[in-house]
Length: 215
Image (cartoon, rainbow, N blue to C red; front, side, top):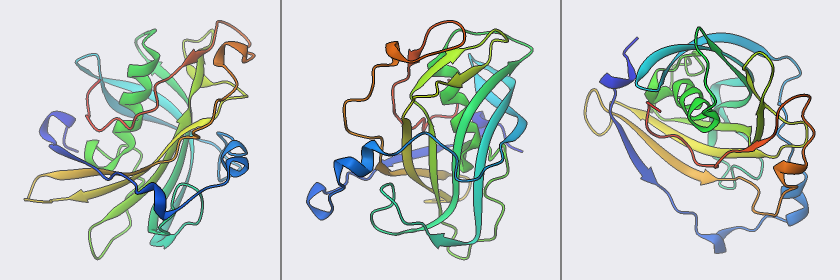
């Protein structure tokens, strides 16, 4: 598998035209940072973090669709065919420690994506047009537990995005990442400071899809 340093990511931000669709506030507020499947997956992957290739153990849930199917919901107003739907819940550093919550989550989400390594093999289905749409979410309110793992608080809303990957585009060896929609709830959430954590204190992450591979 190629390292992120050998990958080239071109970012195209597709700005949504707000007049094309509206989402009821009640629907947005009802979105928890929950999993589409009842069972969590735990997997050790390689991430590019703090100028090094490191190992983390990521806990997530995932649905992969072969072939891709239209996935209805607030994060896909155009009803595009979706290849995978993933929710990250916990990230544990392996062999190192850090208090950089933002960098650790960014590096993990990036490594799961197709253009930065496809570390969890979420995009293994053959696709005739070589376009892969990914619905990805992770908790906005997080904390470090006693083991040094980063995980979401129970009350956290999700940072959520619909992302398109096009490998070997526009030229061979280049992988283009396009953020199609930012579907993070645009309402005032319960402050992370009021979240209940077993240990430590809650941290609010900045919701932005990590297009770069290294953090």
